[in-house]
Image (spheres, rainbow, N blue to C red):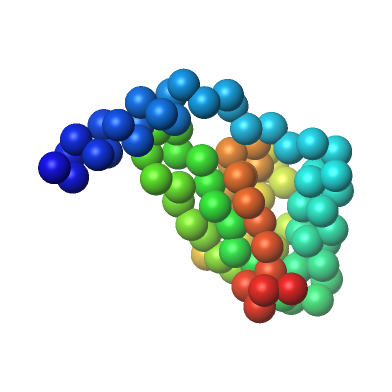
Length: 92
């Protein structure tokens, strides 16, 4: 039963339009990244895995100069173009 539900969920995602950040969301993301880096505030993010459930990550931004299109956090690095959501871990 769970396998059937996963198949249905995957088919839904394939039909949905790709996610793109609008200008306002991009500005908010940049503000959160800068604040995390300068004030050492932890962020939480979700990464699009294309057909599977989102990967979740958290940590403090380690660099404001992403190399290879990746955002480096204390727990790992993530492809910037695949980030679906980003927020402060404390909920602000």
